[in-house]
Image (cartoon, rainbow, N blue to C red):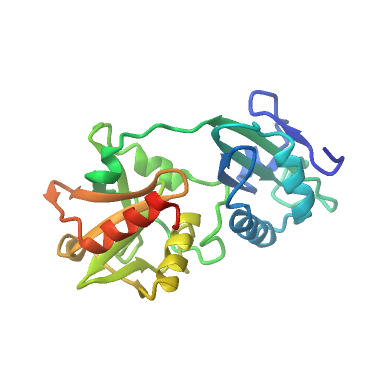
Length: 272
């Protein structure tokens, strides 16, 4: 581990002066660990470095950061790694220090075991009342302020509902509290435009690239909750859950179209 990276575990103390704690000034990534490797590191690094630049954080050396992470993850098995980079400590006030010393936090957790039926038969989701604000400066990146997602997720406690979909101020569906969204219309795949709000997910990116390689077009689209109910089907995704078809949206039964089943098959093969 190099002197550049101040790696500490989550159960250790963080200074009250830490800008990530005080202001949400920082970024994070949640990554798959498999047999001592980070299989999707290049994608995570691209989003992480973009986030650092957007927030004015010194961008770490990618190779050095990767080496530090690899040296601190389990060598066998499958895990989830969470990496947080904060702007480090500063004195009172919003102004960043003239010399910023970012703080690096990491922790690994066991890989979650979700019911296989989530992928095979689909899940129940709902529309949230909490909206995402337009914020093109922060759109796409995983910054530390997740308060809108927190408020949206706390809207329900029904265990049958696994995810909530969030809208923008113009009543357009953007994403889930923890996932990205795709829907199907007449054998065409669509996903929301995330240039004004939302997170550009790693799994979303993988799906788009796989579809292009298979000559299946993916379109950026706009859709309201009502139109989403009229679609031919939809699914949610992220790098931990993979792809989950939606079989019920706000108490309305939804079909699982063949295109989604093709994607699920590709996911099982490991090609997506």
